[in-house]
Length: 391
Image (tube, rainbow, N blue to C red; front, top):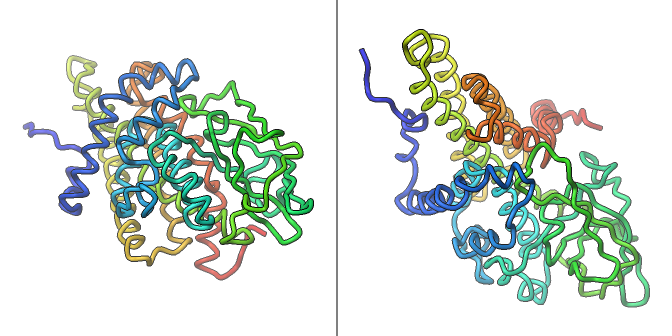
């Protein structure tokens, strides 16, 4: 007996949980990804090159850059709508979603929340349309999970600041027009808005990556960069600033990872229906169906979790430890799904003819960045016990 196959998320009636407007916005982004990203991204991944400036303008026209921010030519959408856009973008490639996340949830969000009116007016409208690209400088080569130990510093010299140091693993670094850089000062950690054409600013592209190859990743080096007093973000002091920005980006990851997982699972289902062994499709074998069923369950649960957290965010009720729950679960399960799907495709699973090995390699990075799996585990552990075990 056979019945008509259902889509994995169709089993959970996910669309029933979305408003008409949310579905429409999701579908617009999905159509763009299907038409403009999926046909080209395997080539970008193989070559390790991305037409990032061209894409930034397209994404700006699409309206997804800083879409969840209000004013300054930003769309001002709901958190759920932004999350759904991230899901569709990462169904194309994690690198494309990363470009949007870094632009909107890190660089633009920092300026929007903590910047002066002059900084907002100068940068946000241009960044919203993609004519200016931003990056976010927090992580250093020796300080990832412990950003409080950063060595990058800014010192007063009259009315100016002089910035020295370096940052590592910076998405968009080589194409950015502006960098939001966090540095030690005599007044604690502060953020600075740094035009990348400032004398002393150098961005070095990171090559030989096996993950996020369709993404620009850089080392930033600052040598005696002289900045005016107005370059400082006036609205925040200490790690609260960069950590709140990271939570914005992690929220997008919670949705985005489910997009990559969905694309892997849909590919594996389609392949298993077409691929025959022993005179019948491998989808007819019990072990294959068990794998598909288990993955559909995790995809559905992760998507429901993302939607729940999105609703909480729209009601201003979302707490940092809940973001850690979402990032911990969804990045982990998406990577597991990608690995299982890769196995279903056998040898074909390692070629870029199919998206799975590309998603799998990308998700290895997503599993680690914006807080490692271990750090988010311990954030949840602290929430449950009151004991901070990561110190």
